[in-house]
Amino acid sequence: MRGVLKLGGGAAALAGAAWMGACASLYWHAFRPVSWGDEAERGWTPADLGVPHESLEARTRDGLRLIAWYLPGSRPAAVVVSGGHRGRAGDVLGISAALQRAGFHVVVHGWRGTPGSDPAAHTLGVYERRDLQAAVDALAARLGDVPIGLLGYSLGGAVSIVVAAEDQRVRAVCADSAFSDPLSVLADGVERVLRIPGAVLTAPVAGLLARRTGARLADFQPLAAVARIAPRPLLLVHGDRDAAVPLAHARRLYDAAREPRRLWVVPGAAHVGAYFADRDAYLRTVGAFFERALCATDEARATASDSPQQAGEAIASA
Image (cartoon, rainbow, N blue to C red):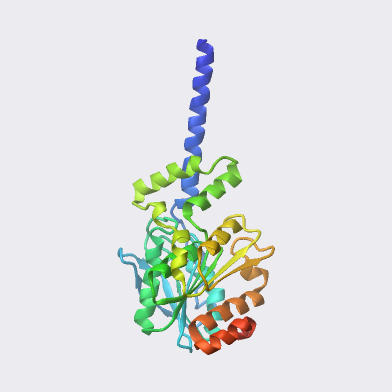
């Protein structure tokens, strides 16, 4: 009997150690600080691409300075472009430059704790919403009262949904590969990799994040916020081969949103892969969306809705 008890105790200890190790691994992968090397590893800048730009002063309400660039346009409309989780600001310069060439004013910004911005914890949207709010504030201070659209990728899409729900200056949102809530996307990863129920690890990891940073993942809920974007238009873009943020997230967001809304599922596209799957189609679709939402009169908006491709021709050919 003693031998059996010892074996049982040893197995429990091993299981506990494995659980703690898995929790630590999940926390590290989701929330570890970004460690970048020299300046060359910070990625592209507008100057590298020959894009007309200015540095923009963007400071969050909790006092952090963010890297941000303003790409001047020629039309009375602007788009703020946000990248993915722990990504570099320069990661979204391709689509940003295309929007600028189509005449939109564009702001590109980095997240807290990423190259060029002040160090800070990563919180899967809880505090990053302050970063996008700072970028919108900086744009409004630079240009005054112009219609503003938000274009976000992955984390940037989720944050764009939440910020738009709270800020009436935002007139339209395009969210590409956005997750519906942070706990669900963490659980999806756990279940995909470890084949165990996600809550076994996500609950303790969320608790650890709250203790270390004060950020509660339950306080950041794109799914609960998305209905408040209406009557402003929403475009959701998602690849049907997205393993990082499964398509189910986009479907949940679409179901919770109100009109006007559109879900564009791109066959064969992986996570934030729609732009690369068919660049011309992507630019036409996104360009037409912002054209109708930010630039058109009510009459022209109705006409453009019948022929969205025409409205996007300028951006696709730019």
